[in-house]
Image 1 (cartoon, one colour):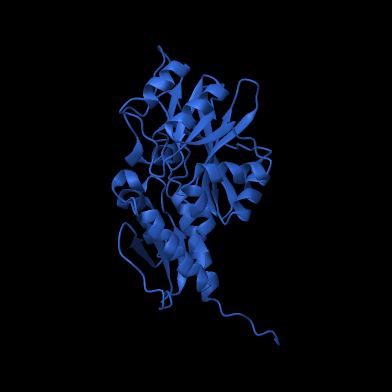
Image 2: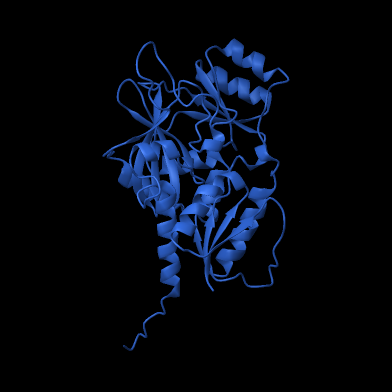
Length: 323
């Protein structure tokens, strides 16, 4: 029997997707790729394969999972299997440098960015860019390792300290700091290559912005004075951007069908795209508040529906050309 196969390395993140599959009576199987192997001489099973490999796998002790996933995807694609978030999607997931280059090729505005290897190159790039400036690892995930420096002296002290971390591939991005107009970013969610919804994310607590419960740190609210606290994650009803069509073109060109694209709007109203996450998660509280939790309009429900439709298409025999 054909199934939906989910390629991943994080059990916690998969729980809501499992629930969505079960609720829709969809057959599925999980391939946990933190370790294991494949037989390149044998054909893969038939079905729909959903790649959920994360750039932050190394933070969970699964540093070889992306490379194993790349081999598995090449095997699947070589045999013509239906893959959602193909090899090209994984390539952009694990390299922000290649991600920014791909975004720029579509005329999508991104912060000015320098790619650096080695402390001297990092310091030189930062001096050229000027403070305030952001350092981020080329392979990150969840905003981990992203740091803002208000002065070059503070940046140099960090780079020369034992705390300095250049990420799993040794590449650091030195990036222009874009100050959001309202201490928030907007994450645009896409499923099946089409816009699903946008969620406002409060950034006043830092850069770790994964919407899943498993990634949240501290209080989910940010009180200000006597005002009613605003949720850290809030779905924006009826949100539309003029660049959604361009995002969809970018996703299609790079084999990405499920993703979250994060955008900052500055004080002049200019939108800056700074991250594409192809292993997207969704905040259940935000979806519940919007009345879409557990439905096909919610994130995991939409993914399950999309993958189920793709599986159904595989199961329909092609019509004879003579008929």
